[in-house]
Image 1 (tube, rainbow, N blue to C red):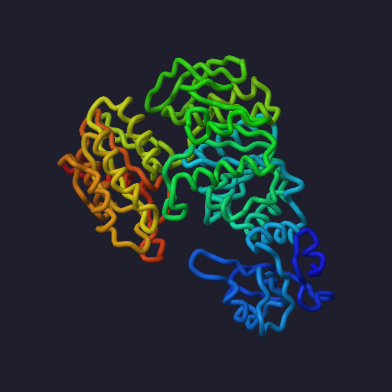
Image 2: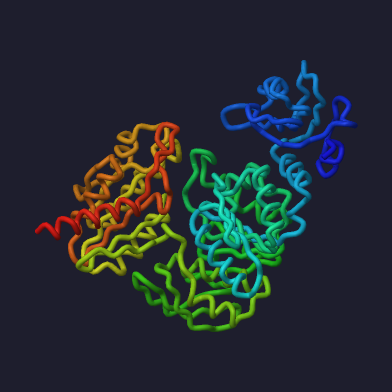
Length: 486
């Protein structure tokens, strides 16, 4: 593609140099990954500024640069824009033939519930015959296709390449998780959404946003930027209330007046039953989902489905078939009525909800295994320690993804929020799970939180193969062999 064609949909302040006959075959934000005929997009990161690597990019073969300021001593043309992060979305979309214009989008943001909600809504749409893809934490999925996305919301270059692949394979709808980081970094600024869902706003990512007000404002501002036709908002979340009376906005909730609500909720480890009032359409719902948090997810996504034209009968039919994604309150049964639940809960709010749900259905003792990620919000660590201490009979504090922090330091910070002696510290996660499973007795329950279905543990920059479910399977096999010997 000619560079002058590539930039036609991007707001350009200034063009430096002659771009008349420059062909662009690749876009990249890494100066080290430059291929033939690449446009290097210099972005300011949290720790480094891509503009400082422009010379390296040219040396490696970049034939043009997209920059926020003119860089002296550069021999190739420069396209000067106000914000290269925002421009990268437009450039990527144009480069891949504007696949976003041929797809319909639903964006789901919120601290918790994004992944489950994307899967639930995709099922509602599929039941109605709509060809639907999912993009989020667990990757990209569509009609047998699956590839990793690395981030909850992919960076624009990868996102629009992904959208092009989905379009070529016949996708019509894309249901995607939209993280607060993605909103702040303008990853989805050039995408128009049929529906936007706000699940909740609770503490997370304060290492990046610094304050809850700034974190909440980022999410709320996304619903005010004019890119969303219909907004669906949690009426029970105090941060969301400012959006309730906006035009084209519907609310869902259990405790405050809302457009969509549920009553008569009955819970078990395997399913939840309730009566749903979906915009004055009343239906009896029985789902294969556990927990009040999933009632919220169902209310939000059923509302979105109705807004997108899904028939009420299809919504009701799909309710009975919904399944939570792996690692979202996934139940594993051991022998003698012992239960293990694996969940992705890694924030104070999600840990509290998972433990409260478990407490409601646990007939014996409740054991909590959890940790906190390294190089992330440190203020939530003692809070999560306190939550686990108060809701579980016994807690085992362990490692999550320590990244570049020392696991022992993270575990000790969690422990500062715990005042009683009903806990131990087992830094090695495999050992912590083995310890917890060896402790439970008939009717007891163990909650293993933090990683869900993740297939790695991030330690010192290396992602080592690891999975909570694998550790449970090892315990079951070893326990079975021991029983056989006895």
